[in-house]
Image 1 (cartoon, helix red, strand yellow):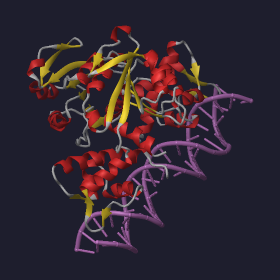
Image 2 (image 1 turned 60 degrees about the vertical axis):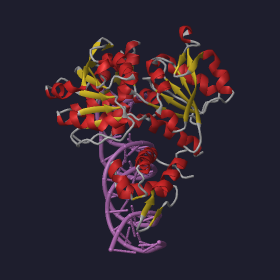
Image 3 (image 1 turned 120 degrees about the vertical axis):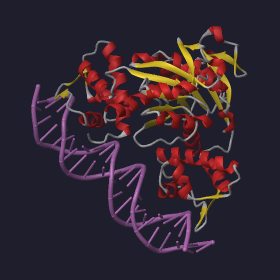
Image 4 (image 1 turned 90 degrees about the vertical axis):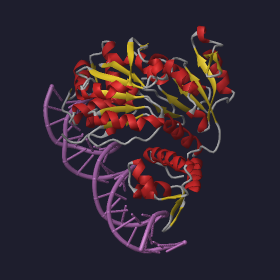
Amino acid sequence: MKRIADSTVRRLSIYLSFLEEIEGEGVLTTSSDDLARLGGTTSAQVRKDLSFFGSFGKRGLGYSVPELAAAVREILGLGKQWRVCIIGVGKIGAALARYAGFADRGFNVTGLYDSDPAKIDHRSGGIAIQTTDDLDKDVRAGKYDIAVITVPAESAQPIVDRIVKAGMKAILSFAPTQLTVPEDVELRTVNMAMELEALTFALTNR
Amino acid sequence: MKRIADSTVRRLSIYLSFLEEIEGEGVLTTSSDDLARLGGTTSAQVRKDLSFFGSFGKRGLGYSVPELAAAVREILGLGKQWRVCIIGVGKIGAALARYAGFADRGFNVTGLYDSDPAKIDHRSGGIAIQTTDDLDKDVRAGKYDIAVITVPAESAQPIVDRIVKAGMKAILSFAPTQLTVPEDVELRTVNMAMELEALTFALTNR
DNA sequence: ACATGTGAACTGCTTCACAGCG
DNA sequence: CGCTGTGAAGCAGTTCACATGT
């Protein structure tokens, strides 16, 4: 398959949330213009994004909302359930564990890990917290599709190295540090300092 | 000033965290090659990024770590203290309020707001929680440089409209919804669903 | 000799504009 | 006729390669 730009994937997520919203309202058809207005893009961009994956509309008419929503869900890989573990049950990890919006999209948090012995066997959002000693074994057993890392900056790279070695292929990190993984591992990082700095840069340079 | 790409700003943040790390270790000089290795980019990219803002190195020698760190801090607007308010003191909002890494970079959380009367006057991370009724007045008084939005999806756009009307110019949103602001307002959105979907897309299409 | 700074070449994303089809 | 789907054109960001300064 042709390589798809990251920006295209991000926009597909935006289109999908709009489609699900109007699908809930019972709207039956929509157009690239509607999708563009919301997503802050252009109708040509919407059509180009979709064109990488097929032809989903009817010329002169637009798109069937349920059909397009189903197609985009499929494209994004949301047709199945994904098993997620959260490593590091501090404030952010605990907040994520309890976040319901997760499950709605097929992301099931089925494991929590922490290195602090005081937290082990406690529950967070209905799931028992295990020691990180169990992590390698569980990852090696293929228990998870995605790992979410919410440990302190200095622990992040060692943990990532461990789970990558155990076979983990997709990681979402909230640790405020630059991580490196082999190129067959998919890594995304959410770094709040970076987002705030993008704001202060914009505020300063005007 | 020439328009700077978002990707350049993100990389500057990465360079800075590396520079601060080695500055702490007492390293005195570095090179575009060193900076590239960590940031997962190329030395030409590093030099190009910096060249938009000036000439910071010495040919044949490299860069002075303290000088370059100071320069990048200045470029990113980190030379001053920024006053930040957090709107929505749920799990994520509370976690952010307590996050120390904030203050280290000059971001001072000086206001917390929530619409839930049960939370008002309670404290989180040492700061009293105020009603969102006070928000417009406080924003209009210029109390904050940046607003962080951690309210539920359905409340996000109304809150953003209110603070924008009151004069807020920089917003970081964690609400899982697409927001719209006038173009003189700087908005960044961290959307976890979008990050996870980028992972499942990658896992599915290989 | 070595590493920076930068115009020029290149790559790839976005926008345009129109042919195609309901 | 209206809106999609898509080559072609345009533009922005990245990479190359070398002149420049120490």
